Length: 531
Image (cartoon, rainbow, N blue to C red):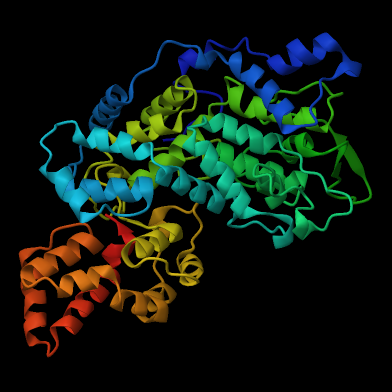
């Protein structure tokens, strides 16, 4: 199934707002005139104008919206109608709890918490657990780490010019407050970090300690890089190839790329001629859908204009869709599109579902917690795992997914306490491009060797409270159960219990046998996988 960039859009309520004509430029700039541009020299001033644009966005004023539970049911009904393939059953409460804890906090639940959840008879306990975890600091930190990874994974910026930790900490604060996604992105897009005179880069010379500045700095303040990354990350459209030539596979022209880049230039912006490098043409800022701000806008004003076009142009449903697709992909294991491949004529699965979710995400004012709750309350999210080879099988099961490096590090810390410098080793070994589809991610020998042979982890395991507790447990069966519940957050099968009891009895030293069992569980593929 292919979808046109401008047609077959099932978001009719949004298109009713087609009267929207860039309220910032129309009501502010044109009214005041070229010589009376409002001050945009501070982040606070920029965000005030972005808020004024947001207040006029018709999709945020509509009454056509649904709560998470109703929309979740609607999504499941449509998925069921769109395929005749069999669905995998829903997971048990035990598996669900581990899954939702890992997805929202990065660590599996404590066994006491898990046992209490399984014993709870409330029919709405799954929905309640989702809402509870969405409000935690752990969810905010996990989101901040994910987006830090997305922004910095392939950043060419010198280390002394950026501060990824300041960026992560700022994002953590925003997600903790449940700041809407559009306002988070707007602050990144509109930022214009300047060099501080007389200060070295490593001494906050680019104001990199101000978190939002780091998206621009991660792209070395180069208009071309910023344009390519903002389109890729925030619209899901890979337009970078059009910097040097018309896109070979899609209908993007070189001029369109450089018109987009012009939004990020501090002054005039020029495109070098393809055939004669001595010739340059001045380019005027123009958004990918054709909207053009007044030519006399200055650099900071153009960036605010860019934020307005990106988030609040009713025709630009790609901003909401890109975020919905990423979140769905992270939670289900597959997206409606491949991440970063949402542009014209791209393959899409279950088009109506992604349209519906994206429209409602707009109606809900880009509320990230609402979106997570909606998706996680679906049967699609709560199904058993299965390896999926064909697109026709998508969403009939959940794809088993590899934990992100920070989740592996948090899980080890949760078990053994502070792992010191080994945390960075885990980050390095388990690092993979967060924009790559899960189906393309693979484990590595480096990862296996780290968990098996790292001296710090071996020492931490040997001295862990868990192992001490297991040694004090007289019943071998109970010790095995506690080991499984603590490390893997599940009950062992009868076959597993029998196998490990046999190992304990055959071992010459019971304590060493128990340590072996914990070591095996930590080194299992299950420990680093969201099942």
